[in-house]
Image (spheres, rainbow, N blue to C red):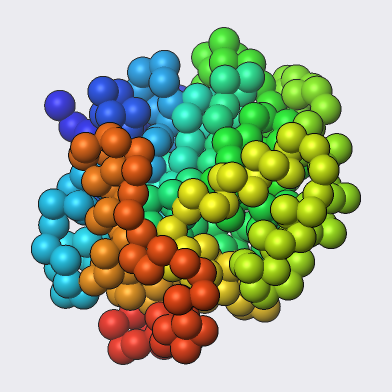
Length: 349
């Protein structure tokens, strides 16, 4: 069976990620199948909207299929870079869609799952949503356009999210700008029926008003209570300074945030912070994705990405040996070189 089920329901095209045993982790084939469906239906005059959902009850998408990346050749001309290039192009395409594209972010939505959902015209979370960008924990960096989204979160909430990799619920996902509306998981059929009956002239604004009428209050965002501390601590361009300030903050939230960051790859942390800071000034999602692709070139030939996957997915000992193991050993010049865009680009210059 196809890894992406493409289903017509009235004037709706529903894209169903279909690897439930892997929480719908994205493969290169899935990226191509979604792109082909957009090719087929984007100009169809009888299609009013698209909806992305995940099969099974565990989540929309747990991220990219990192086991296949672990097993791929470790060079800048291999299949990993080809996957990221096509994935990033798809993320940008979803963001540019003329017809409304809706993502149903139920359950686990991480990494590559964010890429195909959080750039949509309308993003719906549920009471079961678990939203995160945990890449620094596997020796990688927040990508798929996260370094466009994270810098645009209120204050320094995005910096905190990107460095800690912490999982957010529905209210917090809306607060940081990764989602728009909250519905309950049992409203999916209602949402499908509404989208299937949309006039083909429906605009993104009209769609938000229609779905907003059935959305539910997600309740208060717990992260809002921590924003003053986060804004005070997570400023600046040095991870070391953030950790020092964090170590001086009282309370369990600060202590857990400190432990979360200290467990991550030093290389990934410094590169991620640099990407998020540059993401504040880029003019388009495509520019952020291009910088992320440059970072991929540096990480695909380094040790930490594979060591992180080994520790989390392959051996599952949860004890990665980062190289280097200290932030001060990751030079600023290495970070600068890692973010140089080469002629091997995602988008035309």
